[in-house]
Length: 206
Image (cartoon, rainbow, N blue to C red; front, side):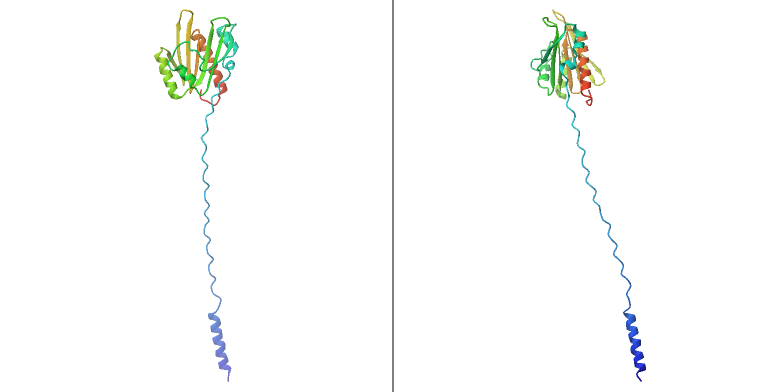
């Protein structure tokens, strides 16, 4: 009989089929975390300080202010170059400070057909030039007055014609020089120019 043989073949086939059954599913690979590069920060540019604006002479000292301080007949004579600015009180280094300034304006007022006049110069100074000029002022007998960050140097004396006065105001890298007949005049004219500079340069520490 072939039945036992057939049964044996079927049994072997079943065993073989069991050995070749479905295998366990393989694990999926875990995706690696992606690395995102941080953007390189852009350096903040250093702001460039604004250049000093020196207003026109008649804005520095309006004619009404000049006339109130010096007389109703006072007129604006015009601008003075740094080379033409004439000092009433000789201070070593003062002329060189004006001619070497990167920013400068000089002005003159007075009474026509008379000897009465006064002048003003506004200029920027380097720290070394300022320090040298301040030393020269003290050596020349000027008195120094300091309020907050503003320093003033003043000198007044009588010559054979009238009183002569000079006021130097230092603020930041700026000097305001005013010369005329006495400190009372130079203080008034210097204060007018200082106020005009503040208005014209709102972002500068004056």
